[in-house]
Length: 240
Image 1 (cartoon, rainbow, N blue to C red):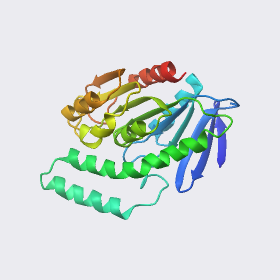
Image 2: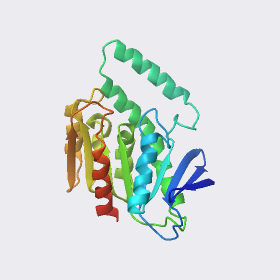
Image 3: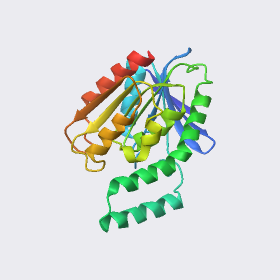
Image 4: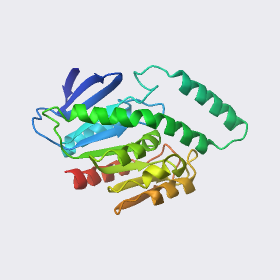
């Protein structure tokens, strides 16, 4: 594990088995604290600029620990021939006139079968550290981070609150029905990748007694900056 500190944030790079990850905590932290797992988007990695910015805000403003890992075939992980083959086939199928959303859903379901046990193992390892401990856990993930995050949140009882979004019901309906923790759900009203009706159906499928829909104009990658402020308040309320 290598580490560095800047502006009050301690950053520790680690590898758990084959999983490269990064843990951020307040500099000098010594006691148990809430932990948020950040799921990055497709084509991104554990230290993508938006992941890093979000992590630092959680640490400096909430005193949380934050962890992110590279999902298979992303970041520092090797390419997966099967995933490359599926991506090539899907591109050809879309060019031939098929809808993109069902293809994305099938791919995310495939990757999720690998990432759910990986992320649970990461929680196990990180919560053994004295400056993290076995405190409450939150999850944040949109787009690919939603497609992989819904089955993870459904399977992991340590997660007490989640921010999800930019995902559709085709990938996650059965798992969504098993989620009962508070959820903040983000929808981009003009999303060109996930049809609006599918996003709304996924929100509707969540079994959470407390769930809030945040719908904003714009395309898939255009979540307004102010939604981060809402996320900070949401996790501070449910984990803090």
